[in-house]
Image (cartoon, rainbow, N blue to C red; front, side):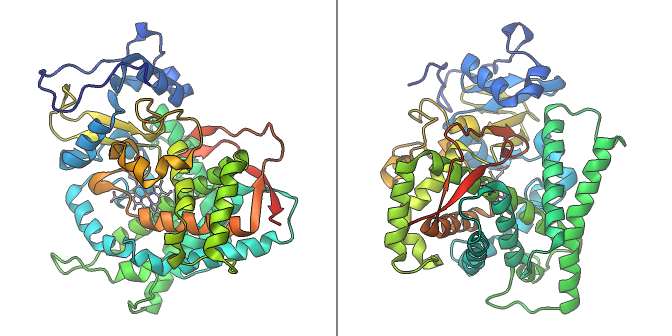
Length: 466
Ligand code: HEM
């Protein structure tokens, strides 16, 4: 299938080689090409060099890896030898600070993850399923007056995702501050996405851009601290049906018997809001877009949802097992438009990956946009084919050629929460409505910010199903 240079297997006993480096004379362009169109630049690098190459945007060497063996090695087998003190996470750390997502301190991260993981298991996230379906049903009530209208789907689903995370974290309704949070996140995502591609001037230099970023961070902090302060004043006990904030407030580390301090709690809550909001919004928006372009897939989805729900209009957590095709639609959407499409690691020590020498402190880039289109593992990768995710098809592929939630010990803590939400929302909407293209020529392209955003948003016409 592939016309790319082939990848050697990890651990092949051929001695170590140097990783090929993109040079000016290669004609791929340098920092400017990366800055102008990151995806085009990296795609050209892969076509030229294959599954591992080095490039130097503005002098900082970064190694891109794009083979499941390399990814398994770095994220899973030698996960402890690679930390998050990498350029991408340094760029986002002013926003995320010491929370789980970008935390480079392995000890602190381990302690936090130990305390938080029990609240994000496949079973415990079931406690939040009602928030997901209740909020979706309310959205559909608001849609009742709007059949025939072209909806700003990204905005509608963005509000829904924030309502769901708000109820799950704080048992709270969305107020005006939620819109401020959405706007602030959008601002930070755009500024930091551009800064990652061209990190000048530094963000601690007071320019209009850095002031704008810091205002956005303040908005997000205010959003979180308002809820935390109110909760501290109430002193709510932890119970079976407690929200995530109460669960985190009462979490205690099994090793030292202590909880997390208030600053750390603030960072974790903010990380959950950020981790949960745009990723799920983008996935669902892209899913509706892909379904609108593929009526044959949509018909199968409708048949499954109708059969699973019978006379009911809203699914429950227990219905997830009867919605395997809905899950496949989500899996395939996450393949094509992986929202957290890039993440990085830094080698703590020298290592060998696929026979190539990786010096200590190397920044490594994993880009799921390309991995999920790797021509050796995905046939016709641009086609939307949910059947790629039948159990048999999954078993026939290397596991680490599909990483929408990352892999290894830093895998997304919210994976089960996200999948539950994505499947339940999609099934609830599909039971009642179709979202169709306003005109056949509608085409939305991805925009590579810190997350992979649908450029200009996704706009679809609301049609009641007959
Ligand atoms: C479609 C939805 C989502 C996608 C695609 C996604 C993707 C990811 C990816 C790729 C990572 C790992 C990054 C790395 O290895 O460097 C990650 C980490 C994380 N995600 Fe998600 N995520 C989603 C939803 C959520 C939700 C719903 C939450 C919270 C409820 C969440 C919270 C987090 C946190 C806290 C981390 C850091 C985990 C750690 O390092 O221990 N994510 N996510």
